[in-house]
Image (cartoon, rainbow, N blue to C red; front, side, top):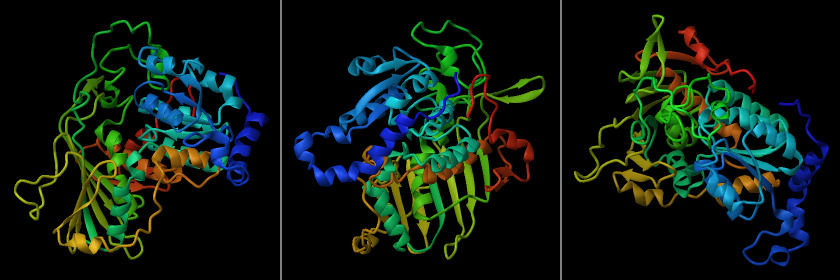
Length: 457
């Protein structure tokens, strides 16, 4: 990969879009340039997709549906990306995003990153350093250090960013924030969060497979591994089940935490935790040279966070459950009722509130609090859509609400819970400013990781 300086022509194009987008609307009405329901040429962004199949394929397709140009697609798996390769036949195709940026940088305004977790940071940073706007799927990164670095770099290079926790844009998320902050259920000191994902959509608690089948001819396995340690291909890793492996994914908590923990972090202004502790089932680790090597995530677990007081707000204990574990059903619920399979339960001094994942509509307990909640003013800005607000921000029209200045610290908090699963049964004290576990420093090696040769942040 060549060392690449940011191209002046690409800066001028992106700068022009950001600086002049609003002026274009004033001088020439949208319906004159593009027709009703169409995006006029002056508003179109040139967007590239890193990860053209699966979730990444959905992200880049949505950009096209919103009226923008798909100019390049990058995927290491030709089979998985075949649908979008055919749909966007005019887009340039690449397997290596580094090559794509070297060749297409001046033609790309924005990029979506929808790859396995271990690729998120290196791909996103490559775009940010070139002044290209970035939408990255959740979790933002594979390590805590990567999240911190992406946040700092995005601010330095002044690019529009967004993490793919789509529920952050939902109406339910805004009502949750407004009702909690208005004190509808009183003072909140206890929060429960949970997901049913562990073991449901991919296996966990298993050792590394010993078989070494040949990789499919349509998959570039070396590029799929990217910065991760080298190992033989196996279908239990790619293309679907990578989330359950420490080297590639972040388990159920990384997968769903940025959706679910998002709302209490936002509503309660939680900031960084002071401590975290995990309790887990026995799982896919194995002894190598008398040393315990972690391979796959636990079958089930509970993670306990402690957040200190924030100004007038009291300390909060937040508990995370996964693998079929859940908090007890609130006594205020009817016998036939149950909590959703993924969600949040807030315990306040005047009542309780719960909601599902992805910005689910909040439900109050007891139900009599609902009438009081309906009187609360809508003080939180409403979103035109999660992807749309990012695309608008790319043109200088406002700011995406889950930009990296928000989603970076959120991801750090989630990934701290993931890291705690490496030392179950130990309460870890966390120094967020310095990204250090202060009472068990041997775990700090997992705050970041060593990249394979040829890969860099």
